Image (cartoon, rainbow, N blue to C red; front, side):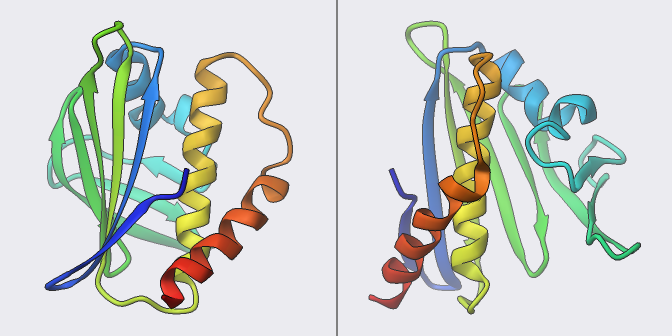
Length: 157
């Protein structure tokens, strides 16, 4: 299912929702423990896990973008800068012992790269779920391509 994209006063909000059959502590570790984070987003690294701390993004050319952690509530919320935008992960316990996971990307300006990012986040969340379920995800690019096309169409309308 694609993210819900809504127009806001300051741009757009993309909201991804997943219900995972794993407790918030396990899901939180996927977001905040570098050994687990690198299994689904190898370019990200937590440098200082605290509000005001940093996450680095490896640009692949020997340089890194530093992102500031804006909010950190263990097992509940993680928000940080994402270029000129922000991303926020919200976790809450589900009735069955699992986790309701919401990822929000606050997008100031939609550009040609936006559908790429949205498709990337969508696939990343699918990969997180597969890793937690201890199953192989398969080829990420094959999963990404149709989502990219769908997000391009969604943002055109």
